[in-house]
Image (tube, rainbow, N blue to C red; front, top):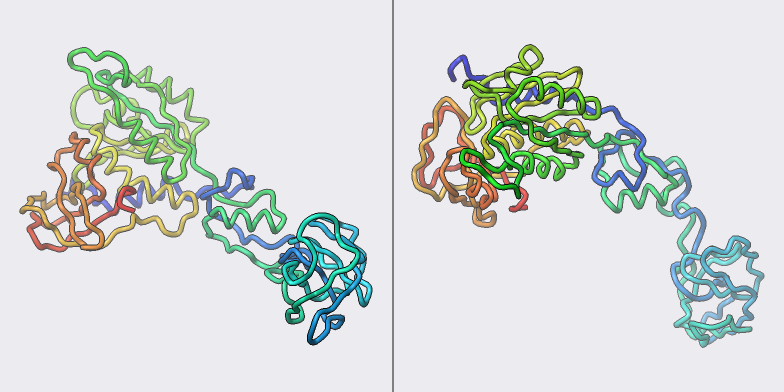
Length: 407
C-alpha cells in the first residue's frame, strides 16, 4: 500500500478510539430497549415474591384428599389475584383461588376447577367436591422459585430485549444502568444540494446522504438528527456547528473532504480534524477529530461512499460506544458467481452484491463507482476484496458482509 494511504483497519481503530465507550447512566425501562447493561442486574425481591397459584381452582391440604374416590370439603375463602389479606387455610377445608393469587398458609396443592363439581364462574360455592386429585405441590408456584433477593438475573453486557426488560420490571427495577444511545448530529454540505421535494435547477441534485446516515444510525440504536443543508461557506458551516455541537455526542458530516477547491469541511476544520486518505474503495478520503470538544467524523460526499464508510468505520465504533461486545457485521465466506472483476491492488474494495445465503454464493449488483446508489439499494450484501488482490473471478472465495435486508 502506498505510504500516503492509511490502512483501513488502522483508521477504523482511530475512529473507535476517538469515540471510546459511553458513560453508563440510569435509563427508565421504557427507554432501554436494545441498550446494553453496564452492571449486573440483581433481584430486588424474590421471583415469585410469594407462593401463588398456577391455575384457577381450589387450594387444599393434600392430606385432606382421599387417596381414591371423590372428596367433599367446605369452601372457607375466596382468593382472587391481588388479595393481600389471605387467611390461613384451616385443616379440612378448601379455598377457591385464581391464577396468580397468593396460596394461603397451610395449603400445599391447587386442584384445577376442571377436576371439581364447581362452576368456573360466579360466586364461590359453600362446598366443593374433588372428582380427581393431583400430586402434592402441583400447580403451586413456590416463593423464590426463579430467583431470591440479590440473585444476579442478567449479567453486565447483556443486550436488553423485551423479555429482559420484563424481567427487570418483575424484579423491582424502574431503571437499569446501561450505556446510553449516542446523540448523533448529521450534516451534509454542498451548494449543489437541494432538499427532496423542491424544484431542481440545472447543476443541482437532491440531497440523500443525510437520509442514508440517519436511517443507518437509528438502525443500530443511535438517536440521529439531520441539520438543514449547509452551503459551501466556512462561516456558515462554523456557525451551524457551534449552535448544535453541545447537544451531540458525535457529529458526522458528508462531503467537502476531497482534494479539490471549495472543500468547505476540510477548510473549516483544518487543525481540528486530521484528514487522511484510507486504503479503501469507495470512501478513500476520510477525517476525524474534535470540534470544540465534540467528536466529529467527516465522510466523503458520494452516497455509496457514505454508506460504505458508515459500515466500515462508524457502525462498529458506535456499537462499541454503546457497550456491545459483538460489533462485527454478520457474514460468511461465499463463492463469487459474477464475471471477473478487477480491483485496485493497493486498496480494499467493497462491491455491492446479492447473496444466496443457503447456497453460499454472491452475484454482483451494478458497477463499482461510488455514485451508483440504485445498485446499493438492490444489494443485500457487501463483498470485500482485500488489499493485494487485483481481481476476483468466478468460483473464487470472497468475504461477504450481510446487510439488514439479508438478515
